Image (cartoon, rainbow, N blue to C red):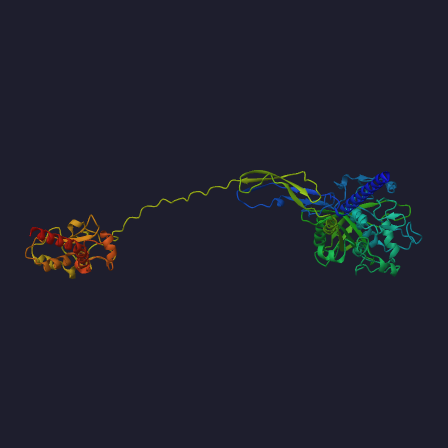
Length: 627
């Protein structure tokens, strides 16, 4: 029984262990599914200097560029003239002085040197080499079975050849995006013909893959390269592709090789891939030159259309242009699908041609004769141009949507404090748990103390002569105009006639209303007030003895009233203030006019009454004692 129990316990333990392992494996698998792949991105951190107290978001110091190892959006070039301009991504050697170009004998035409300019029959050519970046798809001119496909005539396949050249350039320049595209959408076929893919490298033997794909599905009718480019990329047939399908069912089912990126919405947002322009009948060379220079500066592939005197129209591809100091195109580098198209010819050649303007400037032509100044009747005329854009903005938007979103958090802020000056090193970590190798530096500068306000040197304003009120000379005959008025004359008048004229009629107008009264010393006042040192009460004033015995008390009062200097009306005197602060009452405020004299006497009488009663009782007691 004991052995059975131990066996059961062993079985239970093993089962629990297996269950934990299974749970752990499931959890790890779920975690692996939920955690996106660590994206390849380029991190950019920047340093920042702020003032003390300035707000700063530390995450603004870092950003991720997820387009690493992918072609970027190209900024337009700003060429200076004269210049030799070539299609973006091509590697075309400079021609130099045409008179010094190597001349080949006529019997070496089928095996010229590659990668260098040479002269043959007074024409300048250059042969394609791997890595040159330009292409030359040629017709076959035969009705038998083609190398790839069911065959058919291609006499009118010049637009297909020009479109094939531009598309091969487009695929090569966008190759990183295109490889990612087919990796993302494996259900999309990139096969052109059995055994041949649109991403196969170009060579002079099998260079017709895209041209043959067009010939496989379109009847041999005329068309425009722009129509072929748009259909090949998006799967949509527009008005510029008027050649009918050999198989309408195929035409309806074809979705384009890159329609998952270049759909109608993205094309409306970022602009059309293709562009086509016909020339008006005036100033043709200037308009042609402007179009070519603009297209090459904006990294577009260029083609143009020729018109021959017999009514034959032909599409060719432009790979470069020699532009003079006035910005006009004098020579072009082009490839032609009719130059090497015999069964035994396997050459890809580019040729230099001269652009000739008609005498009336209404048309332009090309010629291999550099000495020709005016076009001949057989000279082909340039009647339109077209171009194909790389579509880098649309590619970049699509690729960015595929990438897992990268966000950052602050791993260590070095105790950053915007209020404490110093230097702080900030480290970050992304949302995949990977620490960012680079750091950002934040410098907090101490806040500068505000400078004390500058006081401008000012001159103390001097009083105007009229600032101090002066007595009008006509008002006070006995006083100088600048003499300050006083309450009473320094010499006591001895007779009435000299005192009477200084009464109110002549005194009132002498002082301006704004003149502040000046307080005379107490000794000069006719009536002096005294403060009780014990109680702080106002004691009865002492009447100044008038030196003129002939003046009665009424005369004295009148004398004081008539000799005081009138002042600005101070308003009614508050008796409470007078009791508390006798200095508020000036010597030239007569007591008899304010009623203060009676009030003071009443208060003193009330205070003295108890003392009188006590003295009276004490006196009465003394009298009783005596008796």
